[in-house]
Amino acid sequence: MPRFWPHELLTVPRLRKGDRVAIVSLSSGFAPLFPKVYERGLDALRTLGLEPVPFPTASMGSEELYEHPETRARDLAQALEDDSIAAIVSSIGGYESIRLYEHYRPAMFRRHPKMVLGGSDSTTYLLYGLRAGVVGFYGPSVMAGFSQMDDLPTEFKDHLERFLFGRWKRFEYAAYPSFIHGYTGWSATGKGGVGKPVKS
Image (cartoon, rainbow, N blue to C red; front, side):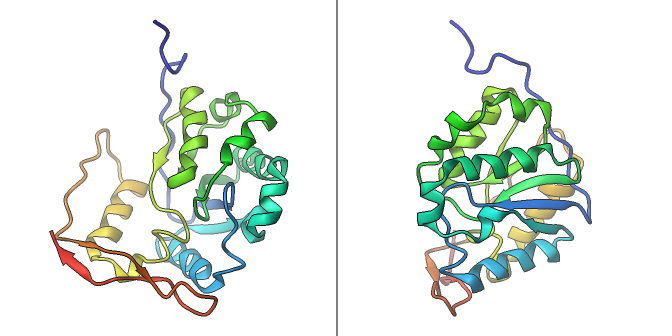
């Protein structure tokens, strides 16, 4: 029975303070609808010591992105091929990123292995990378995760610091003392915070 991935798995370089990270919207385009939430996420990346580099899709709306999957695929390809970019972070998830597949092939992940981070619909292209034998990371996006960093328990930022910049062979995921139920303030002027913490 053939393996899901035909190659040995490649790990990707850890990030360093000052690294440039591409911001892409490969599913939905929510930055124009919720600019405060988006900008807050970019600020969080800067707080972590990274330099966000928004690619064209990051500022596009959902309708335009839906009509142009080739544009989304081009952003992903260019972010992978750009040696000045250390990682790729999704602006947010959404749906139908599977339509990007006809515009590129997974092999480009292996030619340019780097951290690709996102959640929800980002699973599609994380699996594209895995198919090429490159480890991907299901995690926070700019607008759903990084944007709420200051409202979450301090353990969240500590976790990100260890994960993104630490030297580890096997990452230990420590349980948080509380969890958050729901988001608040998602409007054109709202900051997109989180609900009250609930003890675990």
